[in-house]
Image (cartoon, rainbow over all chains, first blue to last red; front, side, top):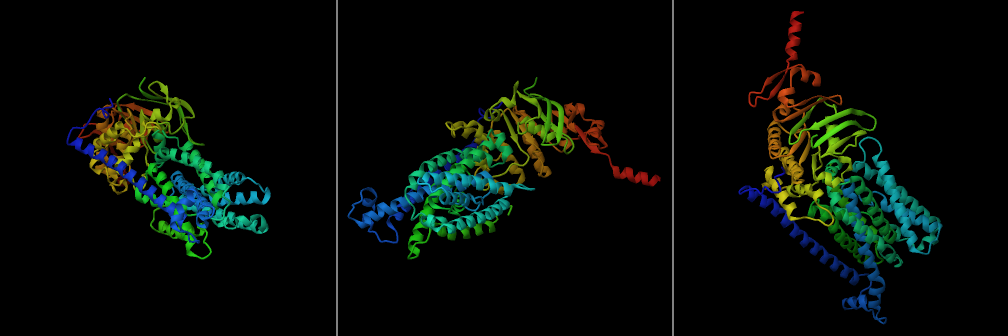
Amino acid sequence: MLPLASRRPEPPAGADGARGAGALRSGRRARLGWIALLTVLLLLTVVASLAIGAEHVAFGRVLPGVFSPDPGSRDELIVHELRLPRTLLGVAVGAALGLAGAVMQALTRNPLAEPGLLGVNGGAALAVVVVIGTVRADDALVYVWAAFVGAAGAAALVYAIGARGRGGASPARLVLAGAAVNAVFSALTAGLMLLSPRSFNGFRFWQVGSLGGREMSILPRVLPFVLAGTVLALLLARPLNALAMGDEAGRALGSRPGRTRALGAVAVVVLCGSATAAAGPIAFLGLAVPFIVRTLAGPDQRLVLPYSLLLAPVLLLGADIVGRVVTPGELETGIVTAFLGAPLFAVMVRRGRTRDL
Amino acid sequence: MTQLHADDLTLAYERRVVAEDLSVEIPDESFTVIVGPNACGKSTLLRALARLLRPRDGTVYLDGAPISALPPKRLARRLGLLPQSPLTPEGITVADLVARGRYPHQGLLRQWSREDETAVADALAAVGVADLADRVVDELSGGQRQRVWLALVLAQETGVMLLDEPTTYLDIAHQIEVLDLCARLHEEGRTLVAVLHDLNHACRYATHLIAMRGGEVLAAGPPAEIVTADLVERVFGLPCRVVPCPETATPMVVPADRRRARALTADTL
């Protein structure tokens, strides 16, 4: 009975077996290398984000500016008061959106599923704007909860529309449903903001997605949620792997696709809601990052999720830095990511990565 | 009672009832093959045995316990299933795909272990794809791919393996290759249950045959004992002769030539 565990194959079969195992082992070494590389990249980007901006700051002022700003130094104050919070926000928002995109794509087995394209961020933004226009909350936490409700509602709506009729929720139908819903949401958001310009004064840039010009009280408010969503998402890596081979194969392996989907949806809503409440609806990051990561690391979610978590803030902060220097004013982060992300989206569709499209 | 058996199952999808009062026994350490016409409920039965379909009524037992009472992972350590058309994650390598068969043996606190390593290496070697370990699954031929999927189920290290039409979409040479492999896995001590379309393959490889029609078992037993022209006619509605296979002496079903019969009738008119 069950001789496999005990039946160590004799050579030459043994040589074959060792080779198979060797492939797995070398994979694990490469994995640590990538984590290290991405971490270094993230640190470098953080430093760049602290050092580069519309205002010139002497590089030597950056480190003191972060840890013990001299109230007399304008450079150090810029670093401490403006760039440090903005950078931290960028790390949190980027990580949240990259991870949310990776989870969404794994859940739907759809490489085009992305919180921006599918209207999740748009729904969160609309809910935030509705709350600002009606209740005038003082605590930023209210916006965060509104964003969760909006994100969840948008996700449910898009899925309900995309899954209707024969054939279910194919990649193309989900994206189309998302685009339609997203268009309605942004129109409503813009309309509401036009109705009472004064209450939305501080949110004009937020509407297109921006790390700058936001009240920093939002960061400590969203951070616990981003952390919780991150932990939940990372815990789902193995069940998502089991799901990737189809619901039947996944269940045959002892996973619970229904539970994985429900928890994954919670993680996506929490991550996207937090990110949108903090920085507005930023699109394409959740699309581009997991795509790049899968190209580098293959389809194993135990790699895709942590790599996305590290790479997304690099790209978001990169886009933010570009936005700071490319025009005299400052270009909003969300506009830069759209500029960089839209061509990639076109390339992905053309390359036939999504066979159903 | 055998290790795996089902009592009085009522199997149904949302509206359509596929089978009622269906009872089957899978003999221990057998290579059981389920045959029957399309939509006779054979795949549905297999899905119920694997708990992919919850019976509306009745119970499936594994080692004396209802499978619905087992935690999913514990069940998956004892009973494996190869679905009809599993999805291959894009860009996955052979070794990584087979490693996913270790899912039920792992948990939050029990990540990749030496046992996992051994099980995967042995499974790769057992189906003869160890030299393909680093290859991307999408690039393999249909037959190789099916062997890789079998390796995934093997790596699960279960005593019972359920296979839903493992030879569909393969050419004849690869069909035989996969079935030979299944026969070897059976000889090594596993219980195999497969749904097959080809009656002659079923007769040749099965130690136990279950013939279904319309959600009912019409006959069950060793192919040599139960396969007759009469049974094939009752199960498939196909007039035929059953002769011994010149290669294995197992029953071989040769469909009657209805064209000739028609031609003869036309002549006599």
